[in-house]
Figure 1: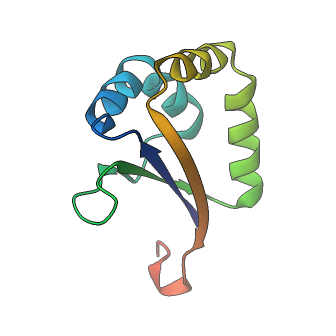
Figure 2: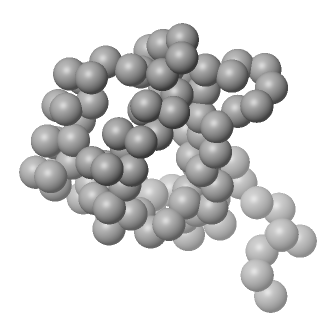
Amino acid sequence: MIYELRTYSCKLGTVQRQIAFYRAHGMAIQTRHLGQPVVFGAQEFGDVNSYVHIWQFASLADRDQKRAALQQDPDWQGFLKKSAEVDYLTAQHSTILTAPDFMLPG
C-alpha cells in the first residue's frame, strides 16, 4: 500500500476559492479515476495558503495506471485549462509514502 501526499500552494487568500473551484469542476472527474481521497484538507498552521490531498493506491503501478487514465480524460484536461485560467495555484508538491506492514489491513 502506498499513499500520495499532494500539497497545493495558493495565492494569498485564495485557498477557499480554489477548494470551491475544485469541488465544482474537478472533484467528480478525479474521484472517478482515483477513488475518494483518504484526506482532503486546508492547512491551519504553517503554510496556511496550502491544502492537501492524500490518495491511497495498491502500488506505484496502480497509481501510475490510474493517474495516466485521469490525464487522458478530456474532462480532466478541460478542468486543468479552467484551473490555469482562474490562476489560484502557485505550486504543487507530491510525495509518495509507503505504509509499514503493521498499518496494512489484516
